[in-house]
Image (cartoon, rainbow, N blue to C red; front, side, top):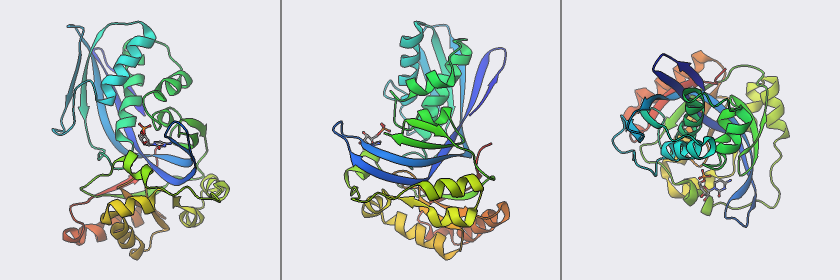
Length: 294
Ligand code: C5P
């Protein structure tokens, strides 16, 4: 995440993530699932701007009409958490420019929450470390902590235990986000926990070596069959990506976005062009050409 401070405001660019590998290890007594997942931050960003708010309130404005700006929004919950933890009672004005598709497996809401902790840390000069913000973020959602270890991390537990990794080379991807999203909880309810979970050793090695062909072969998401049962778009769009010959294709997180892993920026652009030339067959899905974040 990128943070810039001016005289009167703090701006944060909050990236989306994709899961290059996601295995479900067990169902837990608390209703969550034990995961092993390789997460990658990519260059599709929401932008948040934080300013002092003299009324003492939290005032959130968003350019996306269907997103709630009330206390249920994860951004507002992050503000409350930061107030409680820091003992501050200052008001804050927040503007959100939403570009990351919602309910799409791209962790846009989680990234906004992480950006809020980081933005307030800067605005209020709290001096919190990334480790502290990652621990706080875990209280807001399973994917929030990752954004303090991005761009690449091996995540376990609910997804909140983070081991930063090295990426052998920058990656080029095309994201295809269907017009209809999926509920994370509903997808997890439909998952079958494997008796023999797949090891992540090979995918980690391919990522570290920057071996895109091998990474393409190792892409795996245990949630995909459950998501495909809920949304026909997922299987259809993945088959379309496969026909265009990238190094690999997969659904990210709990869907509904699918992505192609490409061998070069040129291949990603040409694949996106091919998808867009048959726009009417995409069922309203949006196409984004992205790279791994630095
Ligand atoms: O943590 P978060 O609020 O993002 O999770 C949303 C829902 O996804 C949870 O309520 C749970 O149903 C499901 N989930 C899960 N196991 C995880 C992460 C999420 O079952 N590791």
